[in-house]
Length: 77
Image 1 (spheres, rainbow, N blue to C red):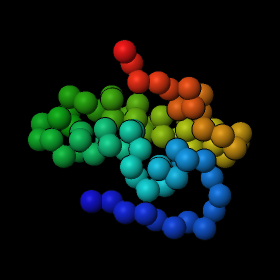
Image 2: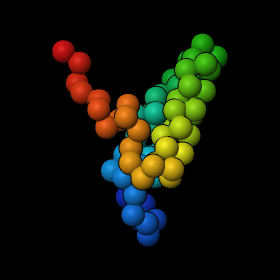
Image 3: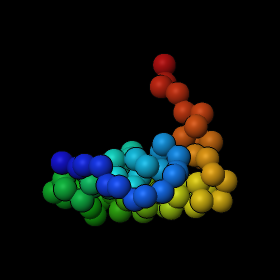
Image 4: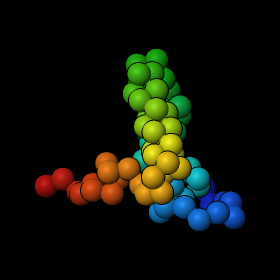
């Protein structure tokens, strides 16, 4: 269970989700960490998710907006 964490800052919607550990990248990391036996086989994916979070956070700090991958994402299909 996760809840809202007040940080006293103005930021983007996705960055606020990241600050509360509810973003898509963190959820993938949680699954990898919690499913027995998945850690060894999904280590590269886990690192990709860590890198994606860092990229998104840095982008927001530099540009003041969410990354294009987040802003322009649509549900496939």
